[in-house]
Image 1 (tube, rainbow, N blue to C red):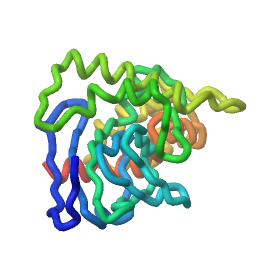
Image 2 (cartoon, rainbow, N blue to C red):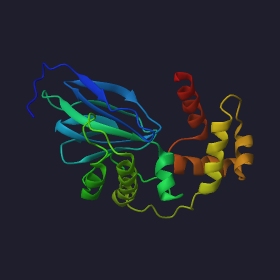
Image 3 (cartoon, rainbow, N blue to C red):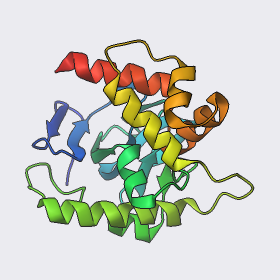
Image 4 (cartoon, rainbow, N blue to C red):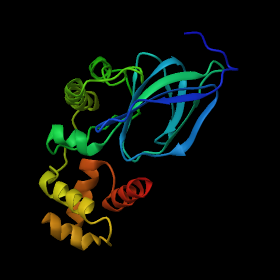
Length: 225
């Protein structure tokens, strides 16, 4: 696909899904300022060079690789050349990945870009053009493949205790049921059946962000409705 630096920037969003948000975009220069999501952001550059600051470094995504931004990691985006960049991205909640992995720590791809062919293949079904509908069963199958490909691409982290997934999930359900009232960490730990600091550590490992930030973002979601 040929690019012209005078082209206008654009963003397209796929029809809403109960599981995955999908976008496709083109930027001729500056794309977006530093920000963060409480989801995985997984995508691929279709043309051009997609450059972004991530974890104290500058990364450059080219066609053929897979972008994997971990939940709650700050990043920006801009064109790496005058040709601009064209990309697709999906946003996947960590809780959805956890339902598939069953309590393993979230896979972490350190540099934000992976050349792993398993991950590239597994993400393809979800990274179709935004005008292309994805069958719900196909989406479920693709999410299963994606979760396990993320684990394969990230490798195994050793020397860490196994997080208490059941307790962290009880805490997450308590949060969703209590968004209209204050939620002290002590109450959250009591509902989860664990101590405060174990919960705080395990929640981060399993859902990619702290209990406090998770509460704040869910309240923002509620306010937008």
